[in-house]
Amino acid sequence: MSGHSKWSTIKRKKGAIDAKRGAIFTKLIREITVAARHGGGAVDFNPRLRLAVDVAKAANMPAENIERAIKKGTGELEGVSYEEIAYEGYGPAGVALYIETMTDNPNRTVADLRHAMSRNFGSLGTSGSVAWQFERKGQVVVPAAATTEDALFEAAIEAGAEDVSREGEEFVVTCSFSDFNSVQDGIKKKGIPVSSAELAWIAKSEVAIAGSDASKLLRLIEALEDLDDVQKVHTNADIDEAALAEAMG
Image (cartoon, rainbow, N blue to C red; front, side, top):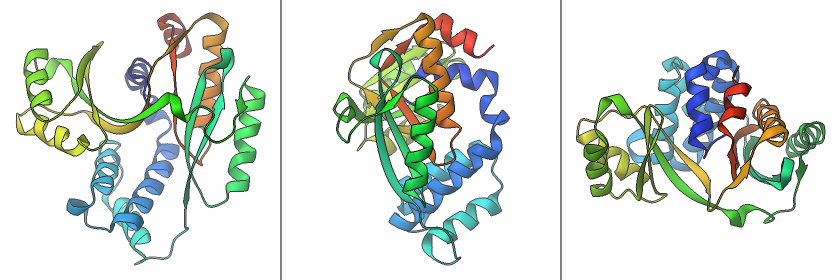
């Protein structure tokens, strides 16, 4: 689930990305391919492709896989044409879900989503039903051990960031969609390492959720993220820390 740093932090600590590397690679390859199709195969001149390649490298994807995905996007190699579709829905306790997908078969995708939802106390909504509760933001994650909050705040704000917050052993820098690349560059130019960065749909306000509802929501999100066609799941839920810790064992 993107857009909720507490959950993202716990997943990184538990090595969930490594455990699902095959599925992660599938999603990253799709993003690289679509980014190259829309903006060209030159990483330096295609911000979306640059981000996708950076994320792929951080996940230890082989360089040849990255290059092949770019060539499929630019048409140099034959490949599947993916369509980007966002779906909206509701989880336990009525929390909002915004689901980003890439698919070559929308009928299959919506059927898979409905199946996952129906088995995990969720339901699909109509277009526009929850999108208004989210806004597109950039998030840049920096290891807390690598810098001081004051130094990062100064570098980030100077580069155009909106906010810097501490989440456990990490700092999360939030910025507008348009300032995403300049904020990353500004932080790096100050010698501060970036551990990850993403464009996410961030909830304008959050809804506290705990107990059995929190456990059900986490199972639903995991079920959705396990679908090949789902790229990211965003929610407006502020999930109870105890439920997060229990979910990760």
